[in-house]
Length: 62
Image (tube, rainbow, N blue to C red; front, side):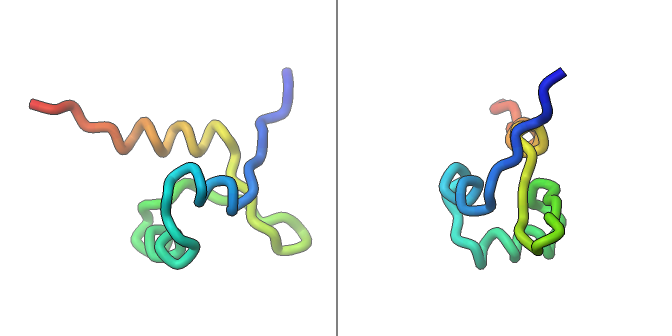
């Protein structure tokens, strides 16, 4: 099984269309995708976690 792709924070910010500051505010409110810290302090977000986060944002229109 292939390893899950890990995205850099800048890639995630570009995809979701928010600034770094907005992302950290979302994290503080518990509304951002789960992150992983690398030993060098850099942040990565797995593709599957980001996709799951996107799907949880979807609400059916009534």
